[in-house]
Amino acid sequence: MSPPSLRRRLVPTLALPCLVIACPAHADQFGPSDEHAGHFRRYERAELTERLEKAGFRVVSLRSYGVGLGVVLQRIRNVMARRDAANRTPAELTSASGRYFQPHAMITALTCMAIAAPFRAVQIPFGKTDIGTGYVVLARRST
Image 1 (cartoon, rainbow, N blue to C red):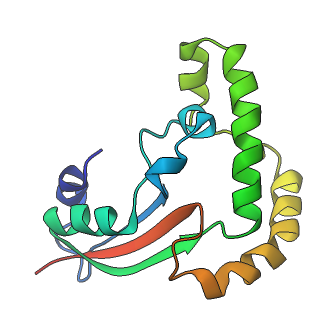
Image 2 (tube, helix red, strand yellow; image 1 turned 60 degrees about the horizontal axis):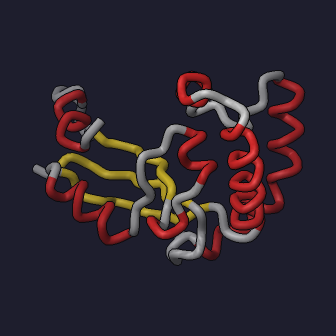
């Protein structure tokens, strides 16, 4: 879905309509795990900001995530996705997109959150850099 179509979906009666996006970063790092997850592209900070502004949004916050452990996990996911893709049809990959490596049980999700907590804390100082694996953007509709 393009940013203009997202903008039209915002409820116009909200006092502060906003948009939150999480997307993969760095076009040159597009790999098998991106295809497996259903991604079509990766974004650079400037490109993402420009696209949102052209769609009528003002970027309030754009933070990088996935510094450190995220970079290592991305490489591991690419190796695993490359192997998995060789054994699955395009239809099977499409039906699984967006759920790659997502925990299915609550106890697994809670365990993953607990293990990841210190790594999330370590990456906080790097949020304004471009060394992570993705971006989280908060944007508001321009007036």
